[in-house]
Length: 449
Image 1: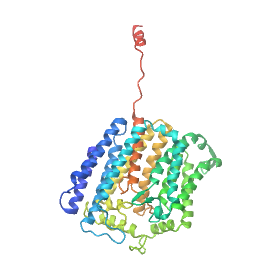
Image 2: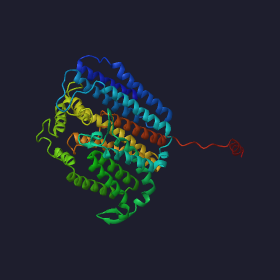
Image 3: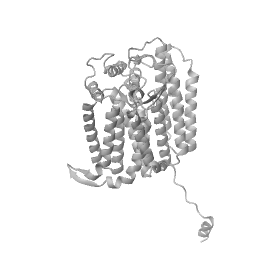
Image 4: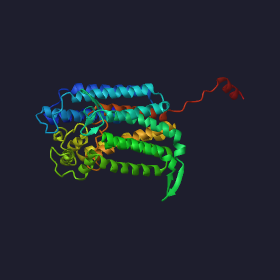
């Protein structure tokens, strides 16, 4: 399956180069051989450290990662072919694809370290509160930094110094997932107790609402100080779903959704940036010009509409007219050049990746590992829904990345670490139980008798 994924990436790379130049790419051996070697190294590490893991997790992630590199290469080469950038979408540097390939290697190193250093996922339970503090610190750093070192397009979610930029929220979600899993395993019996029975739903006791209210307040602070709907939704959604998995109470889901909607409404009236996101969502085609905030969304929607059912073909469209198409809006680039059929195939691959993670969560017996796998799988699916829903106009636009596809090192490395944790949990779930050791002397006595 991994060889099949690499072969699909190779064919996509050739198709993109033929569409751009009408000939095979000159750098074909370089990019593909390096990518293949990185993935073979990952496969060897998985076979060495997690031989019983789900065999589809690595190929699915590799396929998405490889297609993301191909699209970034295609967008980078558009500028070199004489396709000028517009007022808000300049030509990409020629080193962009190389950097994405390097970050792929760094991500695989992260995956290997997870498998080599963590023999069982439940070992992480020892560091529940330490990782919780680390996650909150990573979320808080951009909020306290000056805008010149943290803000991009109005959202303060970066750490920027010189030419180096890191999005700490990508790693904060992983740390907080461990914290939530450890906390809920120890407190789930208390949180599962029912209070009043209203409209057929067992509501939790008022005294048990504290953790949810704290998580809600933290998500509001992210919205207010970092003006980022996406990070807030992922953070609060992760906690509420893991709480539901731990307690099996639908009331927690209803309370969580209600609190998030109320918090978003309050913040929208306090923050002009958040309110602008809702205005763009409701009225995207009013005053759509390069100087208007809805221009990016409209360009992406029109690009996907132009692609139609089967797309223009790799290298034959004009996705570079959408601002930040290589990062936030890379899904619209696939929609324009691969069409509805292509993006549905991408969503199917994402869905399979999430499903395999949830399957590991169902199979593993350790409660902590079960919660952690379920939470990580859900937050991966939620991130895909948030960004795809935003660029298609289904929900308000947010600044989260598309896992494995978007340009950017933080997102890619964090996504590979997440897959590494799922592989470790899957290995624990699928590992056969050790056979009991029989005493040879006792066996001979039994046989003689």
